[in-house]
Length: 141
Image (cartoon, rainbow, N blue to C red; front, side, top):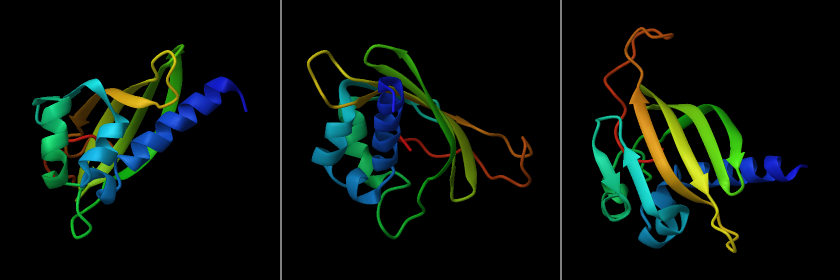
């Protein structure tokens, strides 16, 4: 496996971990996956910082064993340069679809990949699928 493939796979693994309700409920586990300079533009248009996201994540949709989970599909990644991977994919959460884009970075001298930027864009009802509901909630999928 090439280094680029390994980097993309590491970013995908991190993205999927952030969808795990146990990770979302744990400030330390989620914090290890988010870059300290993390920024998100959520499906609602709200801008989130690292601290805001860590505080809110346990209560956002997709967290908690008794709440709906993000269902990802069509996840793909591209290495943009050394230590920088771009992921794109779609999620469905409780019937709401969103197209998502994340930048994962690994700083020089570090081994961990962390989500640096995330954006969720709601998919309008009727855009490629029947009867979809309102925009997907915020929070890294």
